[in-house]
Amino acid sequence: MHGSQPVSIRTTANFAHSLHRGFRVPNHYSAKDPDDLKTLGSREYIVVHNARLLDPSPTLHSHGFQLVIAPTKLDLLDNDVVRNDFYPECRDLLKRVTGCDEVRGGGHEYRNGFGGETGRRGVKPTPNGSGGAYAQGIHADMSPAVEEGFRRIVPDSRHFESINIWRSAIPETVRMMPLAVCDMRSVRIDDIVFGDGQNTGNIKQYTKVVDQRLIHGPHQRWYYFPDMTPDEVLLFRQYDTRQEILNLRTVFHTAVADPNTREDAPMRSTIEVRMQAVYGEDTDREARTARFKAAIPTHYRDGRVCNWWSGPIEGYMPPTQSGSV
Image 1 (cartoon, rainbow, N blue to C red):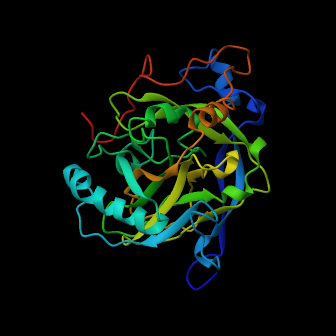
Image 2 (image 1 turned 90 degrees about the vertical axis):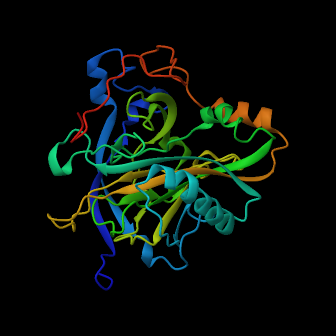
């Protein structure tokens, strides 16, 4: 222990199955056979190190993630306040931390419970209708497939870095299901697979995205920031067009169960805002985008062509929320 905090914790996390290396990973909507769902993931033990003990402290540039102090007096459960007042705070924060030319875009989600559970531990309705469940599968939300859609945000051939701004949504310390982040330098390119993902921003209708998953490897180095206070913010990279090397473009992350969490610990209520830090000219944008996107497999392991790129999910069934009607 370091003071009252552990040096590390041992827990489990959900990885992609190595069977899908080199192929697109389906989900329960796109899998052809229900038995295919049994091979989608692999639950493995991982050691998650206390990032507060790193010296020097990790940064967006060095590790892909960074903890900063950014107090706010705003009500982050008021959706209008978030968009009108908190977004400007986030833009100022990103400009200060990254030194970017400007910050564009903006979208946010809330997390407040366990998907599939009811009662105190279940997901509660969120202020903006986002899904609300703790994300318990290792992933990176974005891939080169997002670039076409982002041209409405960054239309002028500029490089951009999409960054997640993650913090408590209420004036309480985060004591349950902390976010674990993987040092991007410890990920090998062949650890990464692309999957049929879901944008959970609107619980009434999730949409298709192509995300990235991680196959387990003992070389991967995981970190967390225990007991994040309401004044602390975790920044981590979601996608960076400046990075030619695949594993340096994003930070894989997941919520994990901390074995030191008390039984009566309050449910974690967090908000995550995604924005784009905009940098200099992307002088080779068309060729670079095509090169990046070419790395995404177009076939599943069973030989089927994958048509999961964007748009609403056909046959979508909203998850049940605790307290919903």
